[in-house]
Image 1 (cartoon, helix red, strand yellow):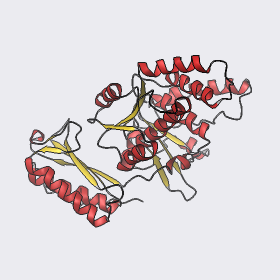
Image 2 (image 1 turned 120 degrees about the horizontal axis):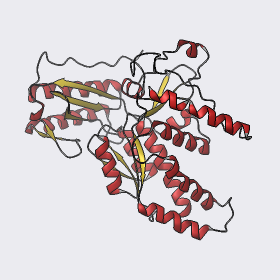
Image 3 (image 1 turned 60 degrees about the vertical axis):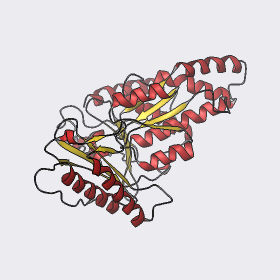
Image 4 (image 1 turned 90 degrees about the vertical axis):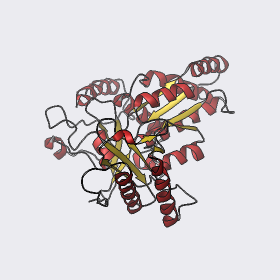
Length: 365
């Protein structure tokens, strides 16, 4: 996609920095899949990597033969507004760090820096906006470890963007596919101005002064208007550098619950409706009760009452007569089973067309 051409401009910036003596912290950047190398977003790109949970195809075989490192990789989508991170460990196993992981990393970093200046944590209201598609483990981590506010909004960038703006002074949102950003409200800028006046004259090595300089730089790095894969990549890389982390350390913050997505074709998608954030069906009347029964049965089967609970939800497609299904559980087999049951409920209660859905089985090669 177009991002490959723009990312190459970083090479000139890196060369300039090296010429000025900044050698130790300058990354080595290798760019693959330029326009013309292959079909746009086919078996590659952020959306493919995130949804299929597979590494992207490298179309430029000369580049792949040249020793591409797979210990730290990012994938943009075609127009470079989404980014996900991924790597392969020593055994060759693929690991994905999606938008949920980005939201956790960014929000925890911002709150940590804010608390270095305001130990009460009350001056600036921070939070994360997620959708129903956010992995349940990420939501629990944000609430219990990061100890930040979490709001669930309707699927779609315009809805999560509005929720971040409305609910928080610093609002972080990243959809699972890596589309997102950070919004800074007036109270954040007032906080920075007040802190600057208070800390003026203190040592540059003072932790609060360091936090102030980091926070003051954030709005210049983040594109607050729209998802921007390049600025988001640089933001994540800066945080990882400051913490001394690699991708594997970041990945170990929490373990994603296995999930499954599917869709069921129906004669009329308008027969199904949901609540405002799409976490529960409101029509047909019997659907949500049946889905809840399925979730409760899976919770009992997996003995998951003390941790992340299996869940599923359904929502009408915005583009076709179909109903989209999402399920997650504590095992891939459980997620497949729960998604399969939800599909059959939709088929029976919402006017499914064609042959009944077949049981889902995830096969990871």
